[in-house]
Amino acid sequence: MPLVPMRVLLDHAAEHGYGVGAFNVNNMEQIQAIMMAAAETDSPVIVQASRGAREYSNDAYLRHLMLAAVELNPRIPIAMHQDHGNSPATCLSAIAQGFTSVMMDGSLQEDGKTPASYEYNVRVTRKVVEAAHAKGVTVEAELGCLGGIEDGHGAGLSGDEALAHLTDPAQAEQFVAETGCDALAVAIGTSHGAYKFKKKPTGDVLKMEVIEEIHRRLPDCHMVMHGSSSVPRELVEIINHYGGDIKETYGVPVEEIQRGIQHGVRKINVDTDNRLAITGAIRKVFSEQPAAFDPRKYLTPAREAMAEVVKARMIAFGQAGWADKIPRVGLEDLARRYRAS
Ligand code: G3H
Ligand code: 13P
Ligand code: ZN
Image (tube, rainbow, N blue to C red; front, side):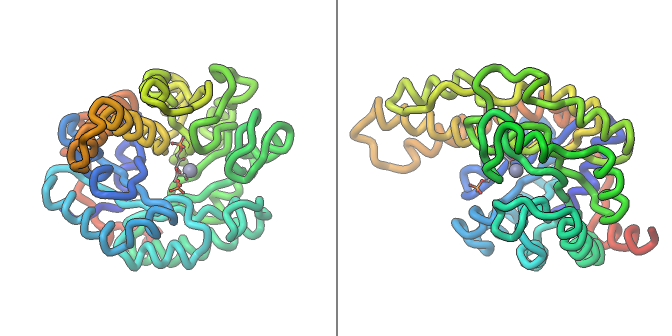
């Protein structure tokens, strides 16, 4: 089965009430870790690459690594997604490189930092939807800006400014109708990276009710939770035990993500937890075996540590066990479907 459009996975997840983790990759070992976890749990897969990842690894390497994943795992449907496209040009170049899904993040201007106007967001998102749907490619959009309510990340927002940029459910209704996007990333108080919350988050900083209200208004909308790493204490402790310096921090509890899944969240973005797992495993080898210098000595445990995290998330999000039950729908089928609608 070739790479599949992400929409097929999200529709199936909605029909059966589960969520699908979207894991970021930059290299071969991360792709292998995801596929190891998917093969073990029989899970459909969303692999995503940021602009930075595409620059780091080069599109040609990424594409061929993804095709290898498809070739080696014929029973597992895999979608390849552009994470946080900053412009229509970025999304179109991803489509040209074989990505089957793109995120047009028009919540920010092209610099990826400055909050954009609603009109700008609608304009660029519509443009990408038109081009992508003609090819059967899925489009994720974002309304509202990420950024912790406690601490500023992403757009550099914090406190009241971040609160003002949470997704407005009434505007979400209008935005989805105006853009025709397939999935909507929502801002509910999470931020990217390890430093999301200063204590276990409660409703004052993690606004799950925004998700519930959007789901009430738009029951068919596939929502996406960004910044969804849980920052497990045990992974931080491994890093710090072996000479690292990660300060006390809290992520998004898996139970809160599960609550989101009950209210329309279908895609959950996780990158930081895998970075933590990889770093801890490598630090351990460097510390315990200072004479080791064969990269396989530390990349093998690093890959295994990431696979463990991905496996745990696949089980917790409910995607485990569904891989071979996803309808075989390809890009051309979806392009036809979009044309007819
Ligand atoms: O969007 C955030 C992801 O964790 C990707 O991060 O831009 O450093 O590759 P990156
Ligand atoms: P984390 O930094 O919480 O893993 O979020 C990743 C993400 O949202 C990628 O788009
Ligand atoms: Zn994100």
